[in-house]
Length: 426
Ligand SMILES: [Zn+2]
Image 1: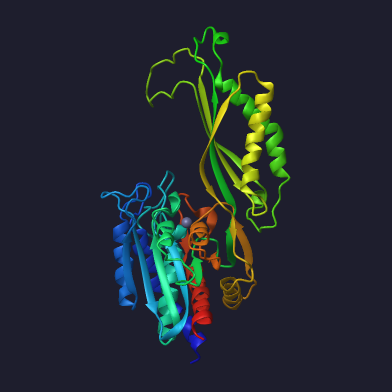
Image 2: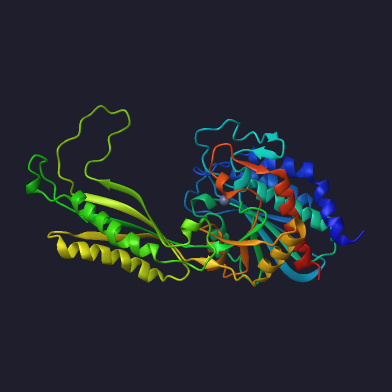
């Protein structure tokens, strides 16, 4: 039999294995926060991949945010070298999942199979994608035992909280350097016929307005930081939002509403602290001497981050020019540059050709509105040849009754296996 039909058959034959592996991963509740059972999931995967001929490393990201003896940040990196030199293709999945939340009608860590679906927290984001990549690699090794280059599979910590104890930590230690790895697929749930080229940028900042405390019955003796912040919010509403709506991108961002610059006012706090839940105490009358907002600005590959920051300073300076006594502080919290692989990059072309063969349709190209671990692979690892591609529907991520389709996992495992055949069989 020719090797390509044999490869597809190897995946079809592994259907029950794919289901069992996905269920096994879901049944290890790797909740983040706090970051629990990371070691267990790394051991589980590592033992399996060792049996498939991979050399497995378990790495704890000592000193990363949240790392402690109680909740150590464990990562697993498995590598299998081929019979001769060649490129390395790396599949990177995060193994952490977000909190369960309310509204489930199934056991979130039961991994129940119903028809074509497997249910559970992390089913689509992204234990289904992780399982598909393992099956793809194992089927490829069976069909092409003498392959060139190397295959790597990693399961990494803390993507849901920024990836600093996971991909960022590994990238800082050279695990994603282009000398070691040449192609990366991140099997996030973007759907089996879509290639995600990258993501928009992010800037988080805290703005604080200042006031003077006084008795609430004589507010004229104080100066309300909340009223000052109200003026800032009005300026954002009247001037900044209309400006952001004019900034459109050529990046193929989905959904459509995210094809422009966006700003979320993440939170606001001013004056007296909120009472404890259940407290029956009444508030005390005071003028607020401080008010803070947290801004979450998402920006485009066409924008410069210095300009993005300047727009906020301009808002504050316009308010300052017309409000006596107005003063503010602004503090950077966090920033990530936008990133986008070229549609001509080798991993993109290879994945697009594989989608066409497996699904008989042309691939769609998308860019994510929010960031994921590609940021670290690009900025720290210096590797541009990276995409997100995997089974599952993005809108089910973080929802109650999250599920992943078995057929979708099989189809995307076939796509991943064909990518390996394309890049590692020469
Ligand atoms: Zn994810």
